[in-house]
Amino acid sequence: MSLGALRPSPLVEQATTHLREQITSGEWAVGTRLPGETTLAKSLGVGRSTVREALRALAGAGLVQARQGSGVFVIATTPEEDWSTQLRQAAITDVYEVRMLVEVEAAQLAARRRTDEDVAALGEALTVRRSAGEAGNAAFVEADIALHEAVVAAAHNPVLTGLFTQFVPILKQRLLDLIELLDLRSGDAHHGEEGHTALVTAVVERDAEAAGAALREELEGTLALLRSL
Image (cartoon, rainbow, N blue to C red; front, side):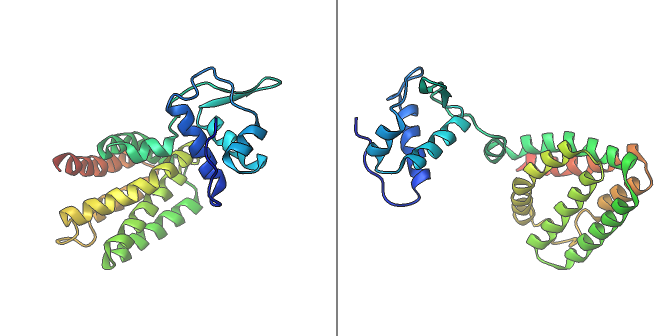
């Protein structure tokens, strides 16, 4: 079976796409042993190293599995979606509900674990956010998220930090969309200033309950706005 020779670039991505289509279309059913690397390379018009990288990508997507001494077999026809993909495709209200669970706990941990270095970082982040009130929406959102990142970092839990990092790109874009759609800063360029100050103060004073409450109130307010759209 000829798969059709590929154009010169980018070869790995094209090879992966072609092979994935053979699987997801049902051409190669679950349990099928794929042709060998040499055969695939000839059909696609690429080198064996390109085929090898494409097969690794398909394995990472949960579509194929290499069995030592037997070859590469199809194990699924629907690719697994990674966490970043799920976030991009999820409803923003769902994202914010999960964000609330993560950040409220992080804020409480931050209040219990913060160091002098964290206090300095939080103070600087709050100052930058205040200054960004005089800037455009994009700069303001950047400063707002940076403050939240500083709070999560102060929890000193690498899993929480890594999880929140996954949220950051989608949060920045959706928050910017929300601000511009509802013109939230037209009457208050420092939108959310009081709540963020309360959050930082609670963390600095090691008041875990107040830190969690301040952040929950802020996120619940944003979630209510999102649900009203």
